[in-house]
Structures are given as structure tokens and as C-alpha cells.
Amino acid sequence: MHDLKLIAKGQGTTMVWLEYLLPLIFLFPMAAMGGIVLALRSLHDARVHSPFDAPLREPGQALRHRLDQAFSSLFLNGTLGPLISLAPLVYGMGRMLFVDKQDWVEWALYGLLSTLLVLAFSLLLVRDYQRIRRLKLGLACELAVGQELERLVRPEAHPYYVFHDVPTDSFTIDHVVVTPHGVFVVETRARTLAIGTDGKELNCVAVERERLRFPHWQERRPLHKTRQGVNWLSQWLERRCGVPVPVKGVLVLPGWEIDTSEAAPDILVVSGEQLAKQLTNITPGQMSDAIHDKVIHILLERARLMELKHLRQPSV
Image 1: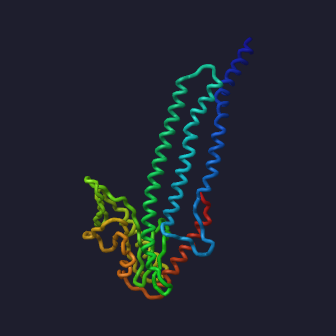
Image 2: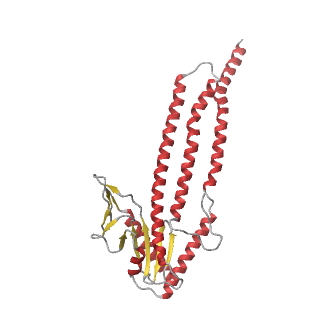
Image 3: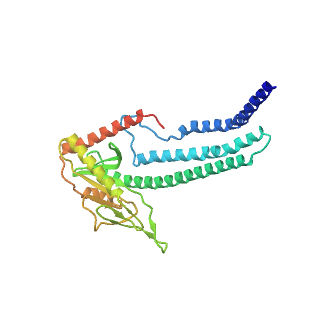
């Protein structure tokens, strides 16, 4: 008799475990669909590579890559979010088939977990939307500035050369322009125009030595990033060329009116209109023809090496 009670007790314990394990069967189709979604993610990679030795670098190339990543994140959160959010409820409905008595507290926990997952993925989707919107604005400004800079490129005898998305050791310079009188580091920042209390757009930004004063906010990083690019490029070119190379920073804020009455002289802040003409009229220093050609050569070499390094890395 005592042995029969032990056997019955053991069978009861097994049944309890089965009540929790068997409902997992209903999650297998959702897991298979999630696996298909993850497998299809690679199809969203829109990167293309040049079939020639020269690297394929267009204006805003780094932003294009970040925009692809943002769309990939939106795709994953939009497709996997509903599957993961419904998983607790599907599991709970499976539990209904294997239990004799319903526990409403357990059902409430399933519902609470699904609600929290829905809120979490909703926040992720909002984050992806805002990120894509910001990157699209940045890319539009990059393309506008790149188009303006392309006016510098005329026949090969003309001593101007424009590089886009120049990689450094830890960051990327938007544009580098090589002229007969020096090298320009051109950074682009896209900012949405502010709206005044009367509903009109406020498009004036005041430039100080260390910050930009927009109508409703202020920023220091754009000027810092431009100076960081100038310092890195000037030191790197001096090491490679053996002589100091004149480098000047240019910060472009497309669509804004610039007040430079309090600006520092080392950074030129402009709206981007007539940018090509402005760069041809500025003389940061003097460069010999040999140094001018060497600067172009080593920048092309670095772009090619960084592109090859990027190709060797596995795509995410």
C-alpha cells in the first residue's frame, strides 16, 4: 500500500511537469516563423561594393550604412515584436488543455507579461522611427553638401579633389577637400528648423567659440567634432608628408542663417550655399605641387585600405 502511494505521488509529480512542458508545442510554429524572419534579415543589406580597385564612396556613405542598420532594426522589431508579445498568451492557452482547474492569477501573469512586451517593442519601434527620420535628414544634408562640393571637380588638370566619408582611427570625416592652398575638413550637421510662438520658422543660429546657439537649444559637439577632424588630419598628413600641411575646418548647417559675429577664426561655419565658391576663395596656407599631389595620393590609398578592411569583415 505504501509502495502504491509512492508510485501515485511520482506520477502526479510527472504530470505537473508535463503540464508545463507540453504547452511549449504551441510555440514551435512561432519559433519557426521567428527563425525565418532572422534568416531574411540579410536580404535587407543594401550595401554595394565596387568591382574595381577604387573604393566606392559616395556622399553620406556612412549615413547610408547607418540608415540600412536602422531599417533592419525596424524590420526585426516590427516582425518579431508581435510574435514574442503573443508567446505568453499562446503558452497560457496551451496550458488550458492540460489542466483541470484554471488559475486566474497565472492567467493574469501571462497577460501582464504580454502587455509589458508590447510596451517594450512599441518603445523600440518609436526609437527606430525617430532614428530613421533623423538619419534621413542628415543624409539629405550630406547629399546637398556633396553636390555643392562636386562643383569643385572639373577637368583633371584642375587642382581640386573631394573625398567623402574619410575614415580616421575612431570616427569618420564627412568630406575632405584638397585645394592648391590647403586642405578643408568639411563636417555637415542636419538640424530641424525651430518653430516660434507665432508659428513661424526660426532659422538663425549664433556661432560662439565653443558652442552653437540655436533658437531653443545649444550644442558644443559639432564644433568639437570639426576641430577633432582638423587636428587628426593635420597631424596625420604631417606624419605622412614630412612637412606641415595647412588644414582648415568647415562646419555646414544647411538651411540655417549663420551669425558669426562671436565665432572663433579657426572654424568656418556656413549654411552651405555657394560653398564651392567660398572654398576656392579661402587660403589656409601654401602647398607645393608635390605636396598637393602626395596628399591626394595618400588619401586615396587610405580610402582603398579602409574599404578592403571593411570588405573582409563579415556583414551583420
